[in-house]
Image 1 (cartoon, rainbow, N blue to C red):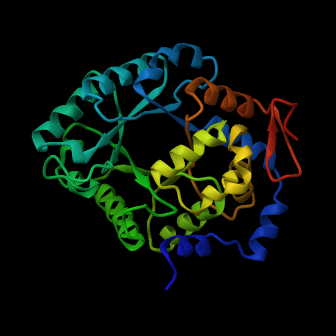
Image 2 (cartoon, one colour):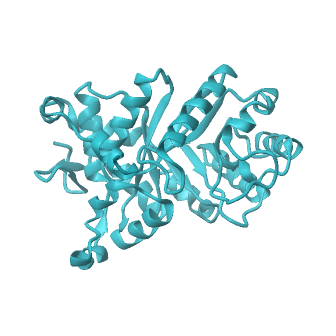
Length: 325
């Protein structure tokens, strides 16, 4: 039997026909520009001080996801969301359901996010905690409470794991993904599945295709890591359980010197844009994780969205060296 990672790797392989269609797709540069213009981005509460300068770099209305770090209070998340809204962006707070003590607390948090944080969408995640503080151990558990609907929410984001999860069997991950999309859809919520970050596009595209083949109809958003030192990305990738695509970092004992250099998402974004422009993949966009800094990621997005890059012969593109070609 194949291991979980081997199953994912095999599923991500492209057929020769698909690879040829992608390689010869027209409008590639424009597809890259469009992905950057419509991208969402992630911040933590310490990044609030950078929201004002980021207004010159991101389009008004950009979705800005607010993470919930260990020891962070709900009030801190709420205040960060209010600041995001005041800057002209769309705040989407993370809500790890395993931290909730009961349905009453869930109700109070949602009410506060909406009233004070001016939130219209939330990202529901189980949270990487070994035990739940209350009755909710999975996102599906909170979707059946009716709390979101009672407070008038019409949109929800949830996590997807194209390369699996480091501690959960792959079959269980896929079952949970299908279940929570089904429950949210039945509750009349518009659903986005926003993925863990990855470094190769093929596992994501295979995951989207497999879920669509199982009847899952939702908005799929690919998570990619913004520009950062390769060593920094490797640290977060190991911590978050990124799957086989981690090989794209070149992180092997014989290539440790590579880790002192920067690594951007140009290759993975180009791969996604190629598939999209060739008409062989249907997904809703990309989401940027800011391991190299929020403003630095905003600047990268701004340059790419402005067409300030050139396609190269190495499967990616070079940012800040000219107009998109």
